[in-house]
Length: 327
Image (cartoon, rainbow, N blue to C red; front, top):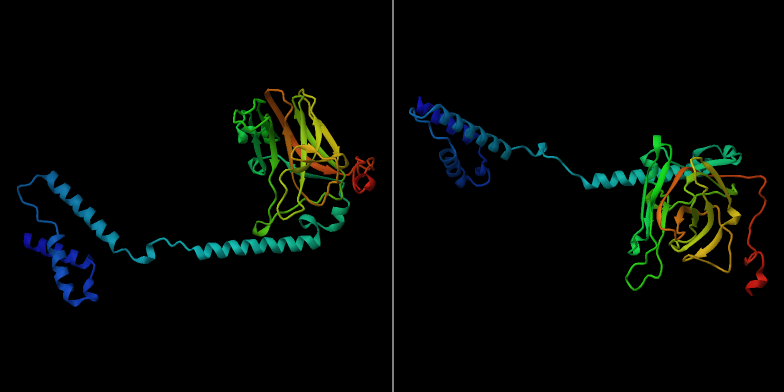
């Protein structure tokens, strides 16, 4: 009986061993003999206990599983195709490019053009979920070594965004910075196919419309326009937004004609009109030099047309309106 078991075990290992003799006949029989003689399990002696037989059976099963893994077919291995991923990405970008071209001829966002022309108000940003928060970034003077902190999260019942934190005007002790104390919230630049920058077209509107609830602090509303291949980081158009505090919401309406041009935080002598068809982003900045906690809750940000507002530009020191001042 022991001889029969020894023969069957050797035949099993011989069948499951790699067969190099397909490429080298001389090594084939000798390598097979080595496998059948060295990898087989020795026959258990009659005097061993049942626990020893159990452990040997476990080792044999483990060995058989290892052999089975070694001879697994290539079809069972997971395949990672970078070519397929690249092709899928290119197809997706071309699909988005086609949608942009078609929507351009139909109307913004694929709507009929007559509906767009008759539109008097439009909500550009609202906050009803985490995906709406992902369209914004927050920053503070920590980027230059300051101590201000700012956070952004969803408000109660996921119906608003809450911007809060602590403002500190302490100047960093690095010997370079002369001032500090600001916190900001900035919208991300929209991207199209192939990561091309997009711009908002607000040329049919004349007023920025917000529904906010603050703590009485004044905020600076900043609008950036995208007119160059590389966006000018320090150039923007700004105006003030005064919150009154308290538990009630307030509607803020700021005409675009009131926004003044600034560069690196300084108001420029020559003022230029905001190009409403080249808007890239909008932001809110707190820098009132009052240390302590703050919060600003935002329901939505939109644009609308105020028929009572007929002013095109509020500043006379413009090369277009008064060229004699800039000769």
